[in-house]
Each structure stands twice: as structure tokens, then as C-alpha cells.
View 1 (cartoon, rainbow, N blue to C red):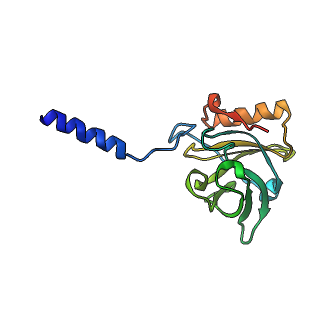
View 2 (view 1 turned 60 degrees about the vertical axis):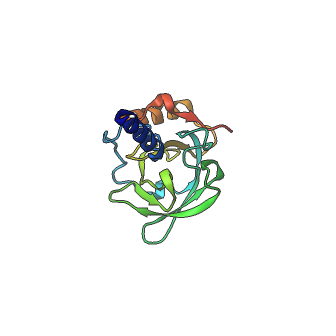
Length: 171
């Protein structure tokens, strides 16, 4: 009877355990933001072309569509509806180093966003989080040249992301 009670208690505890958001990279693995990023490089319109997200809960990883300068080093981020939060504009506070920002968003999107790479022509950007709860490839245009897409994939791979889980954003 004691073993049955213990098994029942463990089963109930498992049901009560909070669901954990998926991680697309190992916890504690190395991740690197763009050192010395000039925020002016990332201002303007963006299109998410691929990302790490749960396709049953959203149609993209971030929904980021616009980056604008805010006051005192903040950014104003416009988020589209595909991330499951509804369209909105939020403030992102600067983080502890260049290329790191903490947006005023709930859940996984409230993690500190790290700019992992910006292409030399400022036409592609890769963002991610140390937690690995999301990552995304963003482009100034709805489609991205294959060589830039591959370079962005390599940045994600270098930062520990599981490329098998990278999903193109449906258009």
C-alpha cells in the first residue's frame, strides 16, 4: 500500500509540474552577441524568414517587424501578430553589453534578445537568447539570398542552436 501511495503522489506531482518552454540550444552553452554593435545598423523594417518556435503556438519566433530608436538608449520594437501576442510596440532596454536588449514582453519573448550577427550591408540580422527559447533570422526583404541565409544558419549553429529545428516562416 505504501508503494502505491508513493507512486500516486509522484504521479500527481508530475501533473502539477509547470510546463517548460522548449529550448533550441543547450543551457549553459556558449553564445556570443555582436560586440560593439551600433544600434543604428538595426533600425528600420525587418521580415522574419526563419526561426525557432513551436508551430502549434505561433507562426514565427519573434514577430519583429520594425526597430526604431527610443529614449536613453532604448529601442522601440514593433511586433507583428504571428508571435501569438497580437500586434504591439514595446520598449527594449539596453542589456549588460552591446547588442543585448530586454523587451517589455511576456514569457519567452521577454528574455534578453542578443543580436548574434548583422550582415556587412545591414540586410540580415540573427537574434537569439542565452536560454535558447527562441532565435530568428531576419531580413530587410521578405526573401533572403541563399548565401546570406546559409551564413545566418552558420551563426546559429556556432551559437549552439539545433538547426534541425529551424523553421522557415510561412508567407
